[in-house]
Each structure stands twice: as C-alpha cells, then as structure tokens.
Length: 318
Image: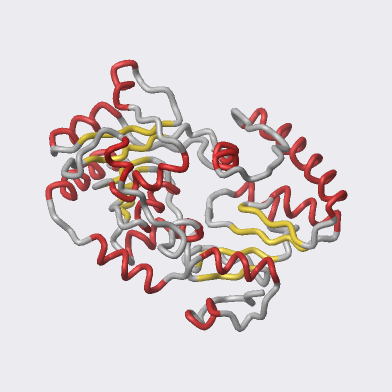
C-alpha cells in the first residue's frame, strides 16, 4: 500500500525489502531490510533516521552514528518494542499510551492518524460517494476485515461470522462495503469494495459507520468524525481514549464482542447523533501530529507550540 501511494503521488523512493507472509519469513525479511538500509545509510550519512516502530531505524542509526527517533502507539507489540526501544535515542508516543518507557519517552497530545487526517492536512472529497455508485442520501457502512498476519496479531480474533454482520447491518437499512485483507467466501465477494489507497479516507469520512477488526482504520474513522466500532481481542491506549474520553470509537474485546458490537452498530444507524460535535472536542484537545514530527526531526527548541498547547507533555520536545 505504501508503494502504491508513493507511485500515485510521484514520490521518488526505493523499496529495500518485501513483506513477510508470516512469522516464518519475518526474520529473513527483517535481516534483508536492515542490511540494505545500512548500506544506504553509509552512503547517505544521515543526521536522523526516523520510523514508526523503528526496529531497523534504531539499529542502523546506532551503527552509523545518526540520531534515531521512533514513533509508536501499540503497547502489545512486544517484539517490536524489545528490538527497537533499547537502541532508540528518543521514542515519541501519544499521551494516552499506557506504558512508561523511561527517560527516552516523549508524550504528545495527538494520534498517529492526526499526522495526515487533521483538518489542516486533509479535506475529504465528496465525489467519492458518486464514484462508488452511492447516492448522498444512502446510508452506508465500511466493514474492515484483517488478515491477522502481523506479529502482534497472532492468536487474536474479531468477528465470529461475517455473514451475520452483513445481515444485521442490511436489516438496519445500510449498504455494506467490505474492505478485506483476507479472502472472502464466494457468496460475499459481491460486497468487496476495491478502494485505491488515496481514496480510502474520503470514503471513511462520508460513511455513516465504520465497523471492523483493524485499530488503525477505526481510529482514522473516529478522528474524521465517523463513529467507529472496533472488534478485536486486543486494545490500545488510543482506542481506549477514543472510546472513554471522546465517544467516537467503541471497543469490543470480550467473548461476547460479536453480539455486543452488532447491537451497538444497529443503535448508531437507527439514531441521529451529532458526531461532528464529538470530533470538534477531540480536535480542541489534540495537535496536528505532523508538527510534532517536524519539530522532533529538525531539532527545534522544546518551547514549541505543541508544548505550549499542552504543558503536561512528558519528556523534552526536541
């Protein structure tokens, strides 16, 4: 997906390694990636190497004498943390991140998703509705199914039966658009929606509801003002906060998650809630995360606008 976006926006790039189809290939792909990144870093002599998660970034930066800046928001990704955090110079986390990393940690009032979906960065394109054969008066739901292939997803699960999800949503008067990483039963393929990566956020912004197993797309929907239902045995600090503090995302993790999530979905579709009001309250508390990233990389003073907006940030904003 990243490569598709780079090509779409004509951004010069180099792919250093492919993807791993499972844990058995992960070590080989990671080793290949780090070796190639090291070779390029030796040539480029960077001052800063930064990444989300940052396993390779932290390792290579240590070897070439660069500063490593890691951004992360997923508390249960223990493998990534154990491999990256000891080598990183600084680790930026949202202020809702529910682990303390120590003196390397900088907390900021935002989410990863606000680096690209803050209203200063993104305006949704309403033509997406007609482009997908929808009418402005249609009620539609984006249903997201994940593959469970990430290292921290192994052994986790979401919905019990996709057919039941579709039936309940359709009975509530909604059209269902499925975006899925995994194969669907033949009888459900007609629900699959192929969305170009650069149009996905337009679609989420105009949806009446997002329901799915992926935390990132749930959070993206929430910060866009679209109510999101997250069905997954895992939870994170940011999904908890979007639920408990802002009421834009609803977490369902327990054994009864499937039934409770569908009951909530029907309730949302049948009631008229002012979700934009909830979003405005969120945006009043949070910052444009891109501004945090740029300050971290360029090494500006800690007396930044971000810190001025929220003096409770832990650590030093570079």
